[in-house]
Every structure is written in structure tokens, then in C-alpha cells.
Image 1 (cartoon, one colour):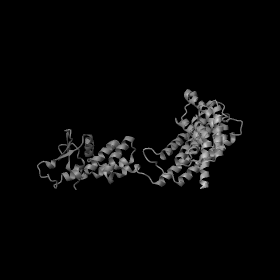
Image 2: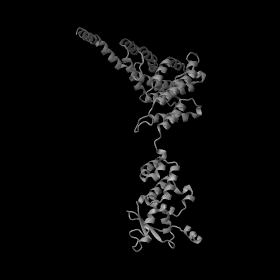
Image 3: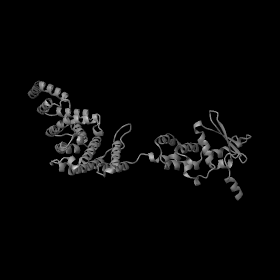
Image 4: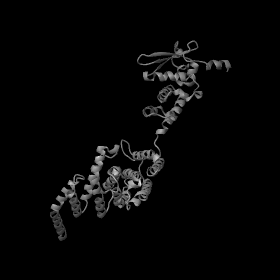
Length: 440
């Protein structure tokens, strides 16, 4: 090839009418009709559509002027993308900078046209760009809508959206649960909170199924993390202060205690979703009296309000598991945990309500709006599962207490009254049935 010819080809410019040998007419249904003065040598080199359209084998190639004018029909929304694609045919893609795409939306629009007109070099460049850059949420939705229709050549764009293997999910879950139940420096608390939020999201069923299905290995890892959290809680807070006259506030350990209770409150929700509450229930039963004792050592309501709320959140999950039979405890233990937390909750709720309502010292307390209702239902369920004499003891104490409004045990009282009144008759009928059975 003559060097002069090569130089001439490389200097072709779109829109140069004197050197143009073909016109591309971009036309829309709305009547738009723009003429682009182009060069067949450029168009046919990197675009199969133009190569076919301008070849001698095209059915209308012998019609006068048909090889000098090519009509391309498009939607008005895609008009600029067609213009940009034709301009790119004049560019050496490999030597151009990555900024020539002018953003994700523009690259996606050009990619659509390149696939339609069969321009493999531009398709590859678009795919490489879109696969590598960050997307905004709206751009991601647009990519999901359009790219799957483009076939295998555009598939690399979707690599970041593909489901991952169970082993990869397990690995990231295990790493995250270890970090979320650890005690990092205070400056890493935001990272820890984020890990906790994402872990909860992973195992929650909403519009989509949970991302992770817990198997025995995952449950075992969660329990190990839980036990390490229990150990740190015991060693750092419970053991030093449950038998000490010094309060948490005097020792400057309020934030430490609060951080552990916050972690336990969060982990109780994870355990509930994974259906492995037994370890937490048994641990909470063992330390309940000590926790209440430490909490009652606060020097003022303001200092311990949030700590008490977090303790009640954990207690709510524990009592829910006991009350609804997810975890089975002997009668004595059910009665004991009831006697520890029922008086504490009764006294603490008004204090928490007052702090939230009055916004004491700018205090912002986050709590589940259904916490008190859920806790009350659990109390009623546990009471109604106790022997009738134990029920009578609990209900007597409730009726004599000045804080009778919460928890409202009216339902338990009504059921106990009914059962007690008809007990002799029901049991005598049962005895008659036994007698008749034995006689037969």
C-alpha cells in the first residue's frame, strides 16, 4: 500500500463533504432526517451493517444512487447514540482515552447501537468500559434491563451481578459475624454497625429469599462467636461489678456495658432468625440476676436508661423463645426468670417512656415500637404455662403492685379464673372417664 494512500485514509473526517462518497441518513418516525457525509472505506471497515449495505451483493446496489446513500432508522431517544457511534468509526479505539465514553448511560446507548449494527470493535470497547466502571443505582437498573438482550458478547458487564457460590457466601458471613461480635476500637464502631446491618439483611426474608441458608457449620460458627461475646461480657462487666459497691458510672464503664448489651440485643435477632436461641436463653437465665443487680447500681436514671432498654430488648427475645416453645425450660427456671424480669420491666418502662417523651439532655433512644407489646405477650404466655399455684402467686403480686398498668396481665388473670373455677368439674369428668376405661 502506498504511504500516501494510507495518509489519505487516516485523515478522513466525518462531515467532510468534498471527500465524502456516501451519505448516512439518520431518520426517525417523528420525521427527523439528518445527513451525515461519510466515507465508505471507514464505514465498511469496522461495521458489518454498512459493509453489507454498501457491498455489490446488496439487492438494491444497482439502483442509481443507492450505494451513495444509506438510510438508518432509529428511535428519537437513540438518535444521538447513532451519531456518536458513526463518529467512533473514525477513531482508533485502542489509542483513545477511556473518557471518550462520557459516562455509563452514553456508553450503554452506544453499545446498543453497536450490537444492532454489528460493530465488534466498538462493542468490545463498550463492554470493557462498562464492566470496569462504577454504576449508580439507576444506571444499574438500566443495565439489567438492556444488557441481557445483547447476547454473550455483553455478558462480562453482568459479572458483578451474578449469584455467588454457597462457599463464598459462607466465607463472607463467617468473617462478618466474627467482626460484628468482636470488640474493636471505638473509631471502628461505624464499620461494625454496618457489618451487623448487612448480616441481618443477608438472612432476612423480604421480597427475596434470604441470601444465605444456615447450615450446621454456620450455626456452629455463630455459637462460637456468641460464646466469645459471653466470655468478654462476663470478664469485663458482670464479674467485676455484680459484687461490688462501685457503680458502673463511678468506674467509668457505662459505655463498655452498653456496647456489650447492644451487641447482645443485635445478636438475639440473628439467633432468632437462625433458630438457635437455646444458647442465649440458657446464658441469659444464668446471668439475669447479676445483670439486674449491675443495672440497678446506676447513679441516675439518665445514665442507665439506654442500658436498661438494651437489656430489656435481649430479655424480650429470650422470653419470646421461652413463651412460644422455641426453647424448652423446666418449670422452676421459667418461674425464676419471670420473677427476675417482671418486676424490673414494670419499674423500668415508665422511666424509658419518660426519657423518650421528654428527650432528656438531647438523649436519642432507638427502640422497636412493638417491643412492649411483644414483651407483654411473652409474659402472659409464660405465666399461663406455669402450674396454677405459681400463676396465682405471680398474679397476686401483680394485682397488689402499684405499677399494674404494665405489663397488663388481664388475659392471664381471666384464663386463670376460668381454669380455677371449672378445674374440679373438668378433672372429675376426666376421673370418670378413667374409671369407665378401667372398668371396660
